[in-house]
Length: 204
Image (cartoon, rainbow, N blue to C red; front, side, top):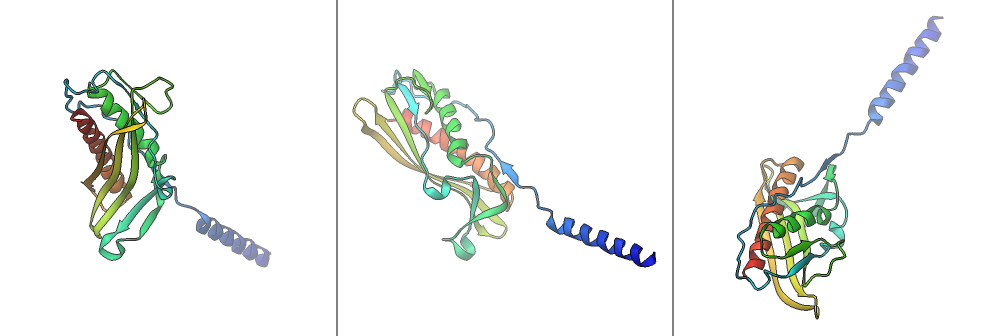
């Protein structure tokens, strides 16, 4: 009887150990939140004031097509991208960024209407945004920055000609040297990028 009891206890302990070591940590999903549609300094005399603008789908290089949250350690191996193991984006960065850009352009007052990429409405001009970097850069173990690099191209839909093009480089310090801090910094950088694009279009 004692032998049977000991065997049962040993089995219970083994099962308990297997369960504890087999547990996985919950992945934290981050988003940019609702767009902040603040006026970005409209220019009433701008030539595009009466145009309808379509915001095309944001394009990305293959490494930004998923939901991985990337960072680089510039103080150690600056050219190497790494992804957080227990944190990611709730959707691909391009999908998160699109409504922010559209909201800023709608709030600027420069356009008769601003429509998104899935809207079938006919537009006079189209804004194409190429996202080239959307990551957290560590200058030291304690200091990091959210970085967005993107190129905006405005096309005339009548003949697909390029009206204007500009590259944007936006950096915002992270409040903490972790995934949460990177997400916060990239949220603020997304807001800043949307405002800068709107101001740029207002001066063309």
